[in-house]
Image 1 (cartoon, rainbow, N blue to C red):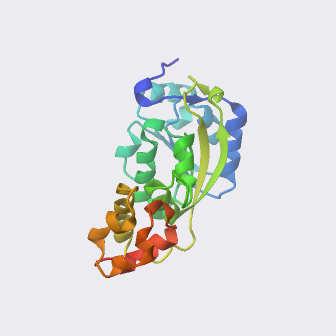
Image 2 (cartoon, helix red, strand yellow):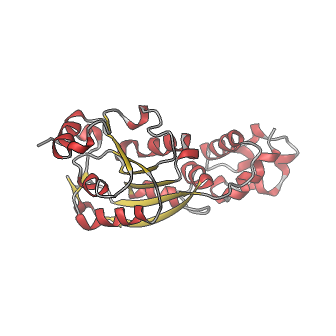
Length: 250
């Protein structure tokens, strides 16, 4: 068997009903290549391996879990990357879907890594700490709306699929969980440049309690800053408003 490592944020999914709901959500989207992040004990992996006609890979940092998975599922030979997801190169040359019960201690970093590959990742289905899942899916005017919300939703349509209770895991986490599906947007909003968009959003939320006029004043001329929009706080601006503002940046 294997031991659970708190240092890696390991909480393994054990509820079969939840596992099947995740797989059903995955099957609503057509794909050829699939990457599972953090397979751990293999509860979700067992169902993913049953999907016919796909190329499957997994990435798992814990060598003990890799050995365990290879012992139970010998068909995974040469299909497991024994590394941190944050350190791997793109695992497929063609577009691929990402799925996983993401380690909660690096789940936000995982999303930003996926954004680096966004052109080749049309769909993501992930289990997150509920608070993070809500941030991903939140819209303007919500207190948890922020950098993560805006940057993810610029590139992906976000669906908060369902909550997952603590009792569905071993060991039980102290926080609730939620499953989110990201599907690449068909047509992105026009921006001056994607770099400008990222800079604007991160700068605006870096001092979210201040008005936009104070938080992003280094990015605009004094004349532009007179616009009434800059009297608002970042959390009240829609993604479309952020996108439109990029064309007025210095």
